[in-house]
Image (cartoon, rainbow, N blue to C red; front, side):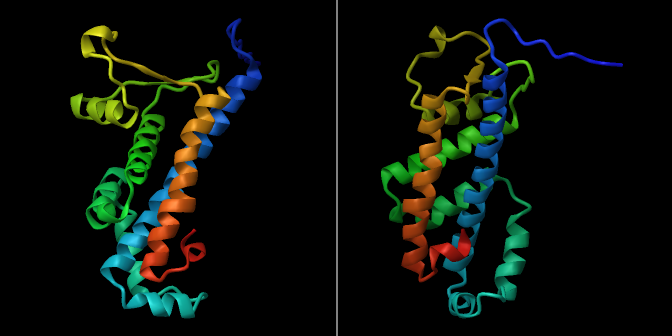
Length: 193
């Protein structure tokens, strides 16, 4: 049996493909940022392993390996909270905002309604707390009385302006904030990237 996917009149296949690819890329890069954050938490808690880690690049210290596996069981929200508890005073307001943005978008992508016939994702926060976090991350000022109910957000990563604006948070987090924190701990950033 042959199935044919029909695209709505106003949506081009290229835009649909671009949205899916960029959404997937953003999700994977957010996991990468989470991994770097995890490593920095571990190094902050176990500074004695830094020297072994930097001097023996082919061998991962047992403590680092074991702690990584422990942290892999946790979601981004847990890692974010732990990371901010340890490094909030070392981050700029923009750094904290970038973490919140990455978290909100990652969570939205992971819980979105996805269609192969649309160039956008739809996300509805699961509860009031998630809605509040999401509105804070994106500085949404409109009162609830002015928004459709239930509230549904649209992510169109096929739109270059939207994608590049949000992708900039990933770039800054990696190239500025995490790099600076790694260096302050004596860890070459390239080793945790």
